[in-house]
Image (cartoon, rainbow, N blue to C red; front, side, top):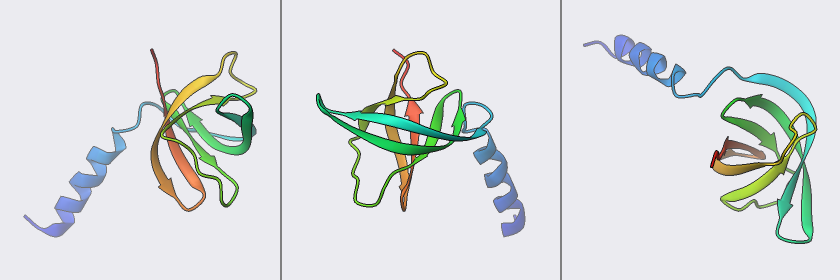
Length: 95
């Protein structure tokens, strides 16, 4: 098996890990951090199962938090799945 075909198969598998099509958005979201603390974030894209957000430098998010977006009627509970620089990938937790 050549490494070229291995890489191709790996990419094909990776395409199906996401839970739906991502839609690019240019929105501001609000994260609830405890009872009295909130943090504004930039929402880069949203899919039915999660979102990619950008946080200001120096902001640390917990593994689970609540995210409010203008296009959602209710806040979403989010699980932090990955971080890359100031960008964070989150999965929406459905109870």
